[in-house]
Length: 466
Ligand SMILES: *Cc1c(COP(=O)(O)O)cnc(C)c1O
Image (cartoon, rainbow, N blue to C red; front, side, top):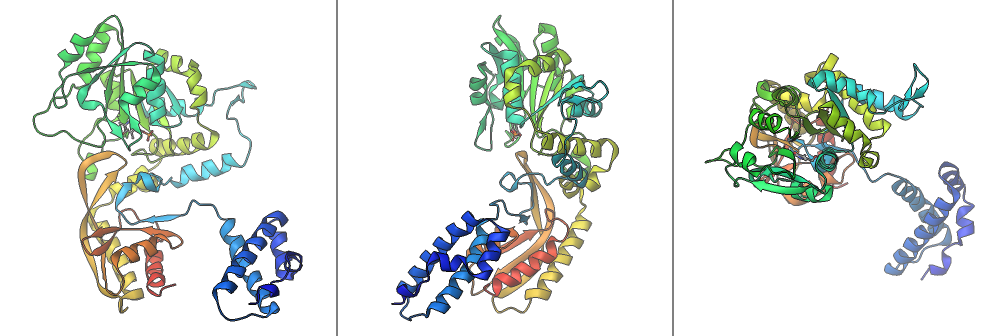
């Protein structure tokens, strides 16, 4: 046993490379890691039969320290290459931001700014003013407000407009999104009482009308973002609901979910009402996410009638749900891209959806040849093929709609598909892929600039067993 050859902590700390680590990090951090490295070394010595010299042990511990310092000072958020073809992948952080949003956010993050100061008058201003005018212009709404996410927007809307009163909702729209957001639960939390009308597959405007009482405060509609009832169905239209609202003087609120500013019809997706359509139809309050099809930061955007939005601004909940300067900067950058820029080019998720089959095929050919170049003749690879596949919008949008895409499919031998996929998830950056039977597939739609080359390198690394 060479346990007694392990040098004392002080001696380790006095080593030159360790002093350098203390300079780079801090002393307490390195001291903790020295103890950890010594423990590891002790276990290794116990587990192995060979005995080590003191100098050798010292060298091993110092070597371990560098790696430990590196590992323990890294954040746990890791860059992921999205090879799934799911554009709005909630587990992968939904929408990557465009350049304009990124630049603006970075600049505002590291400086002071006029978040809540009216610089003309030198008085306190509103943080919401920064995006309000843009949202008015883009959606045609009278007023706007932004909170933490769409779940918060719905909660705030219900709490402000209907607390301890009744809200009428179609049974076909009592949705659950992403496991954590359920309309009935949010309703309960807001203090509003849910009145369900119609049936799962059919609800008529008469069902709403018949349910209105003195207790009714709000008519509510939710976008059934992540599922679709098909067959014998009937839902109440936007105009009908808006009409009933104005006739009965009840506000109408719609949770639009994804929220689009221009119709995705020209990307081969089904037509959907845009935010502007809802406003034009007379819906009083529309809520939607900032990081779904808008392609911006996580946020809950509320647009609509000024008196109702003003009431929401005064609700104490708004303070708890408020967004910070980073969100506001990223959202402003994103909205300006829609207003004055080229979203199909500069907002990543819009660009991904707008890509033509020809462009995707070309991109897949490029990925295919890069992978062939790197691992085409590897003994653990059976086939590498260019394939057509189906992508998804994701994020609870367009649940049933598959969009034609392209990618590369790899069949391994001598390494299981599970192992290859797991190892790829553990590279830096990580690569998340899809599987099709016994093949690993990578869709190119969701790749960002430079990802193809990185994937080829990482595949080679994984196969080399590093
Ligand atoms: C996604 C979604 C939500 C939740 O939005 P977050 O921004 O994730 O909080 C709520 N309602 C609908 C209809 C949705 O699609």
